[in-house]
Amino acid sequence: MKNGTTKPLTLEERLELAGRSQAASPEAAARMVERLARMDTALVFTGQEDLHLMDRLIGGYMESLEDDLMHYAGFCRSFQLAIEDDGPCLPQGEPGFQPLLGARVNNAVVLLGLMLLDHARGKKSCKDVYHCIRMTLGQYLDALPPMCRPGNEAANRNYLTWRDLFLENADPSVPLGDALADILRRYMAGWRVLGRLDHTLRCMKRLNRCLEEEWKAEVNRALREAMRQGLADMGLENVEVVEGDEREHYADPRGHFLDLARSFSGDLPDPGAEDTAARAVRGQIFLSRWDYSPQVLEARAKEAPSPEFRALLEEQINPERIKKAMLVVNGAVSNLLMLLVSPYLPMEGDFSQ
Image (cartoon, rainbow, N blue to C red; front, side, top):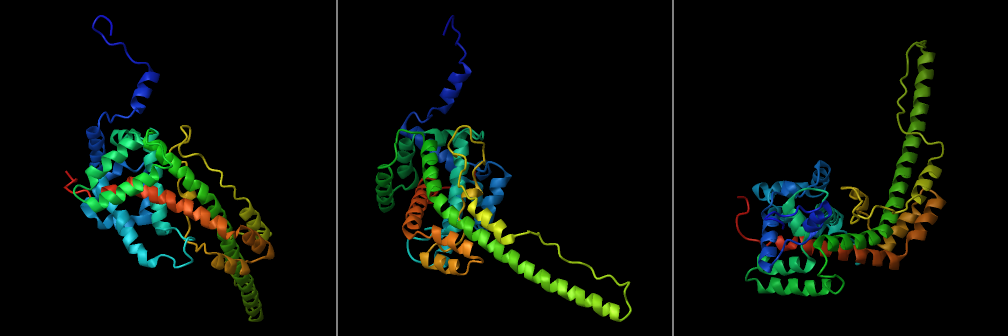
């Protein structure tokens, strides 16, 4: 300050100040969490594309909430409804080889984490989300138990047990956004193993469909030729038999889809990097609803449409590697759920005002 005036901050100083945690006290941190809980759900989404993605995953449960959907705490209940509904329908394969919450909820939780991470990186301008996600991980975790579970000692004990385990591998002094980025990076490390399997299985499925369509096209060509011959025999040469083959053609479908299957790299932008554009990582890291049990994958390999495809899939069926990748994926999704969804489920009061 000079002559009673304040010296304007430089752009760098303003950016540094904005990036700092605004939670000057535990009470301030709790108020930020409460503001997030009350916030209009629409502000969480970083574009219509994200809203459409989430709608495809858990849209039916979101609609069932009616007015409760209008605030973030209510929106979190749609995850709970989806988990409760999916429970009896989850694949009953070998334990350790399935997404713990099912592929649909798994992908919805990952999408929520990616959206909030975009807010933390300043890619969107909702200040309530930004400041909540920019407080330190420790401040955020400390604000949750009294805010979300007043008087529920059992729930608080469960939360504290999870928190202690989580903090064994997480730094409480880093911003919550940085912690989200680390969780999503670990998720992507596990996803790359499963994503390669997904990609190979999808290419096999497309090849099978292509070969089936090719066979049907051959049958249709033979039928059209028979029709032309029949019309000619009746002296109706001027009657045209319409061609109906509108499928996509490949000179060598087996080679095309095999090359496509081998092309998987798993190289995607770091969702936590400052130079990564908003929404750069989304559905690419979603899991498919395959059964990853080794026995099921081995059966699929035996049904492969070519020896080369069978060899490629068998090369990827490593039970130990798949199980380890699924453990990493399930651990990351569980941590995202505990950080971003579960704390808001027991919140009481009318947040619609």
